[in-house]
Image (cartoon, rainbow, N blue to C red; front, side, top):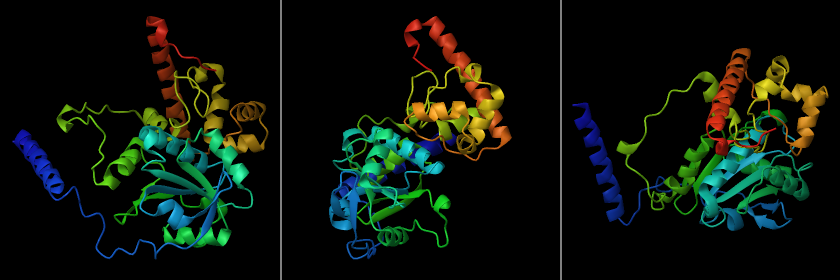
Length: 324
């Protein structure tokens, strides 16, 4: 009976997609009369990392599929992780970014984040073409954040919203998303859902062919959700160092504290913390607000995964990757 129900659901999905295609590929994207259009957005001018002045709606948003988030370059908390995850979104979309999908990171700290500072910040994350970093007048950016629903009254500099917004101006469809979404899910929203699935990725397989989802332990789940944007285990350095064998190279107490409160260790000028900060383009390790139990499970996962990768490398030396 369950197999029949699954087949029925798949058949209904096929019929829905067929009907959408028969109607010219259109699926109603937003309620009729949606206010989100040229008259809704504030008429403000922003300046990108190359010093180019751009009108927010006319030059950046009109008739485009866009992702918009807000950051500040000196943030040592959520912003670096958010930007690293968006780099993975850009990688997943490939050369579509700058062609039919556009990404904008707008500073909320215009005094520090000059165009030159934003250009240096983008370079730290290897941000590619099609992803612009922008600044402007504080009052203009605050108004824009209100319009986009990404501003909280009374917020302090360190607790700004880490949500972002994606939208298709041509259809009027706008969605608020978490900056901690799985990057591939976010890429699919931008590259497929906002195009009403008319530009779905080629070669997509049936759900019936999907592999069974493995059960992750707490440490692996944390690594995939919070660490993988900047680190690998055995695949070489990324935004941060490769963590293969890190539990052997570092004192466990030091490593636990570094994972738990890297901002405090940098403020205290811990020699090893400062050395890592300097080596990796002064990109701060964010404070992920992890508890002792979470830190312990993460360290145990790093230890176990390092052993697994090491065994695989010894069995097949060609799989070994450089690490520090």
